[in-house]
Length: 366
Image 1 (cartoon, one colour):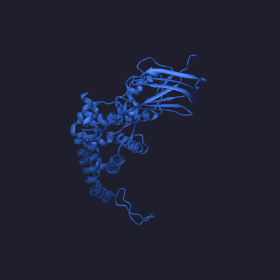
Image 2: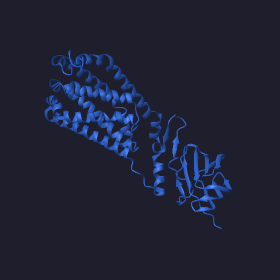
Image 3: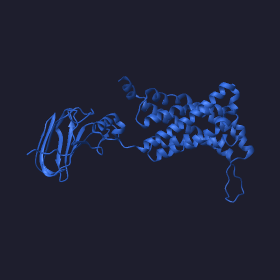
Image 4: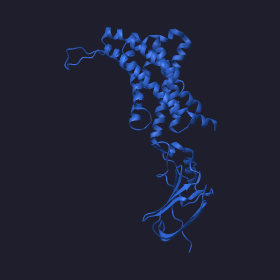
């Protein structure tokens, strides 16, 4: 009597290979586990009902039988096989590259818990190349990840917006020289306001887990730019013609022309070494200059706000509430501007150390 093949699902992490057999009520099992092969025979209820099921194959790499485990339950049979070379990812389960119709990938269990970190990371982030190859070998069509599509489109749209701003500014400067600076806001102000309002979505991305990162650093950057752009520049026509607006828009645009392409590639786990280095290096010069320009805008706005009373709410009023915008700017400068700058710079320094640390240098060397 020829034995049938049970449906076998397999997965792996850094240390172990996991097998799950869709076989219930197993009896008379015969398991032979060696360093380079596995033989299994048993009677049970499988895909073809109650019958005798068996399989045999050689492993892609060696395992450690002494540290491997086997368990048969009423619902399934499970193997936990310890890799002989822990930390090495297998390209496939079997030594032969021939596709076995009864052998499938257990995507639900295919996780990669990092022994050196507290959080559990998915293999899609750790080794997407291996998983993609396994999916191709098995003929699996990867479902559309709408979150990835959305993040890619968002970052591309922001990149296009800032590219338009940067190009228009440079063309006008090439034509008119320094005289074009006073026209900066009238030329690109509306587009800049749109992309800056869109940037509030980045706070929601962090809150809802669409992206990883520091919420406080993201909030400080987005809110700080909003106050400068809408509270100080957009509200005062005389401020819009100052050269500092040109320099500020130039710095902001240059930062984003590097940041958004980097995020576009990272959405699909594509690493562009030069872009990564640029993303986590150019801020060292541009962020302090950006903060300097923002400080100048705040200081220049105070006398204008005193004169016009914009955003100021005086007593008496129906709400019995008072708000003095120039005082709010002074308070922001004295109490929040420098702590915010420090928080942002420290955050970027930590990110740079994490991204461009020794592990990054080793990867480039490989």
